[in-house]
Length: 408
Ligand SMILES: Nc1ncnc2c1ncn2[C@@H]1O[C@H](COP(=O)(O)OP(=O)(O)OP(=O)(O)O)[C@@H](O)[C@H]1O
Ligand SMILES: O=C(O)[C@H](O)COP(=O)(O)O
Image: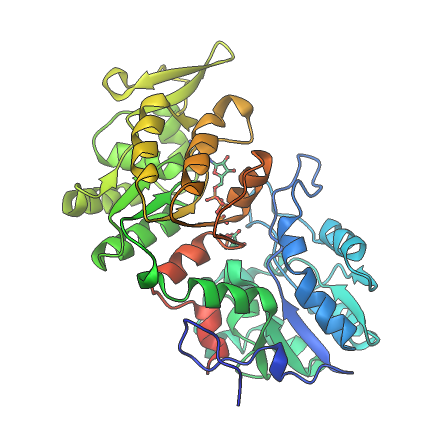
């Protein structure tokens, strides 16, 4: 019988159920990472998170074909996985190569040529157009990527918890055609995040960062299910809610939101504010760049000057949010409060994250969120999830497509 995985209630097979020796495995991991301007890895936390799973499979004699994505089409971090393969080769005690194809003849040959205890990182799955579309698992199983690779594989392992909320071919298509298993990262995340109702109240969600559509969906869900006592908004998400509340953050912030494709979500944010104004908290001020320095503007003085974008929350917001966090039973946090990569706009993220550690129970998640935690040298969170949107979705009780595909 497959080993159960806590919290999901669904019988899912783990690596304890997999006979690895000599098998060729398609292993989906999530090593989507911040990159430097020159395209190198700016942070390798997500690669290190998968070392246990990959080491175990290689130590047990597996032939490992790694599938992963980096960035999104059109984003600055949409790049080859070559640096990721180089770093994994350094982190693992086994040979890791890179193939600059994903499912072509060269890629299939690279998989066929694998020897036991060797791995190859296939090229960024999102270089292939169908991968950035979402399908039901049965349709994903018929996409070119899945169809061409299945004959080369004996089994599929999904360790990509951070992308488990995406119903994309490499994440949901294989288990309908191959025996599927969860990796150790996925297994641990599902066990820890399985039952949010067991965490203490008051429960505070902090939704920051730049993935507005994910964050609004989560906020809607946790409010409708009465899982949240407070939802603190920050980052680009907070800016969208401010516009939704009638505040004028100025043209620079409006243009940024338009450019990111999130302007249409303002109506959704307005609907949430109308229904849950007592639980949703908006920034009270913003930090902008003026004459090369950080300048803070309270909401009463909006809009900032035309070229000044809201890049962080200000002190008044930090004070108000910190008071709520200080009295929280559980804090669930995803996304930075500002452009923390620039020290000028790191205050909000640093201060809120520092306060979140002191909650009775704290869960944080997200690639940049984890990078910020390391930047500020913070520790003491009860769980640092590799996933941001996926972590939040899991905590709302929403199904994760990649997990559902494995529990067929
Ligand atoms: N006010 C802001 N204006 C522009 N960008 C912002 C602002 N606040 C935060 N950001 C950007 O948000 C990005 C991170 O957002 P994101 O939602 O990707 O967080 P995350 O932790 O990576 O979550 P996930 O893992 O779900 O992607 C950072 O690169 C940061 O610079
Ligand atoms: O970084 C993440 O949250 C995951 O890798 C998913 O990436 P995506 O939001 O571009 O699908």
